[in-house]
Amino acid sequence: MKKITWLDVVVAISFAIFALAFQLQRWGGYDPAIFMGSDAGVYTEIAAAEAYPNLFIGDALLQRADNYNFYKVAHIFAIRTLGWLTGDYGKGMIFLLGPLVLTHLLGYYILGRVLYQNRFWAIILSLTTAVYISPPVSDDVGLLFDPIPGLAFGALLPYLLAAIIRFQDETDKWKIIMACCAGMI
Image (cartoon, rainbow, N blue to C red; front, side, top):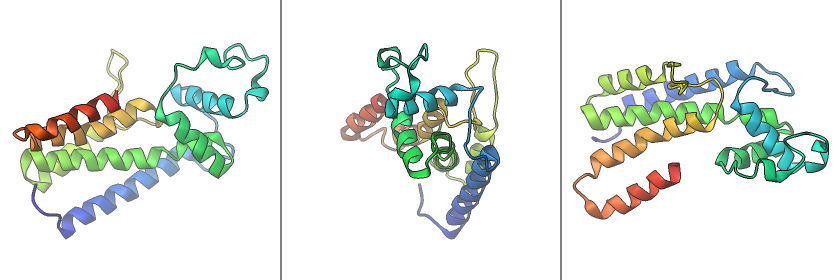
């Protein structure tokens, strides 16, 4: 990949503005932010149950930590941290969306630069991979409306692919790439 130019900075700023708008649109300014229809609600509930187990006495799922201890994703820690900062676990969840959208857009832009050596096609790749698609196999792709781990995986994947392409002949870097693969899983 060639050096970063002012055009790359403009693209990154444009992506950041889009990511902020995407996050604000999803949030809608609600206080508290409540998730009812997706996995985002599950992760938010688990984060709250871990922080305040006494509030979930009588809940069939959340009163016993053994029921949800297998959910060991970074999102729960991030939701708890952001929830502590914002005072609302729902906002903790929604404030993950903007950074993940920006990470996704920039990642596919970088992958496009590595693949095509052309900024125009890199922007096209970034924008086309942002389109939300819900295929029949129920494995959504593109920018999801909730910041769930699937969106995080999709946002980090292009960095890994770009590293694989860039360092394919440098076997000393393969261990790091393989460790990153394991970490994403």
